[in-house]
Image 1 (tube, rainbow, N blue to C red):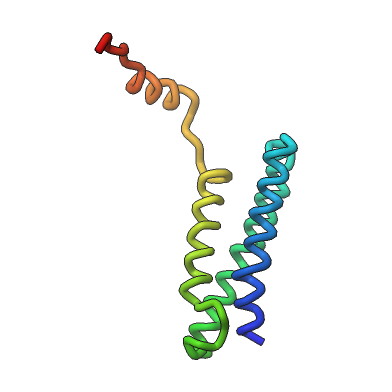
Image 2: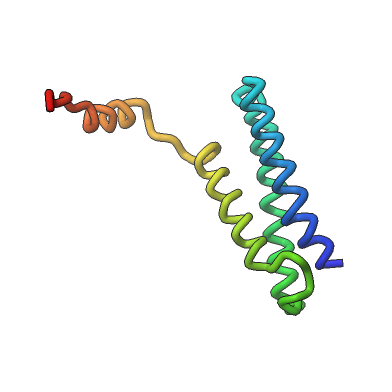
Length: 110
């Protein structure tokens, strides 16, 4: 059962989520569906974290599935990064303006 869950998490859920993200971006629906993105991403992270916990709790053998627990952890790291970038805290507009000024340098004629 857990090998099947690992396989499903590793190959199906994350891949389907990324394909849906791409579809929303291509169809220019991404911003309008950001709440849906957050919910789906949160659910996927939760399922993955539960799977990692259970795999460690029952100490699955390394060759139990085509995907290792380390594979699932790597997928989770990517999903956590996506969550922080898309739904995490953002700078105040004045901070963004100050940062932009730091990089606004005159181009040399070289």
